[in-house]
Length: 109
Image (tube, rainbow, N blue to C red; front, side, top):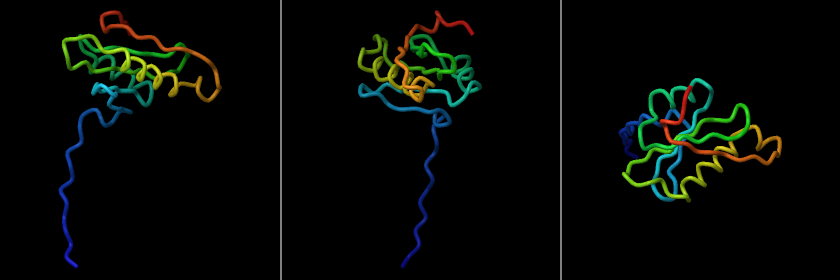
């Protein structure tokens, strides 16, 4: 048998966060803790992106990175909103709650 060495792929900047690609190819980012939530808002949120949060204390911040000039499609908003609610305390408590989204210029932290 011959040993083969595989090159380690370069990690992307967003891989330190919780992330997924929506069905319509939009990158959705989520903070793992309060510090990462702050980092997402202060450093990585840009004009054209979408900020999402659940209506419950302690929920994780979600950002949809918009790589187009168009509006983010409703399916992507729904998928990110579901992730927002599922990653909050409401999921474990079996509470019914909702998520909301706003544009970056509407966010103040």
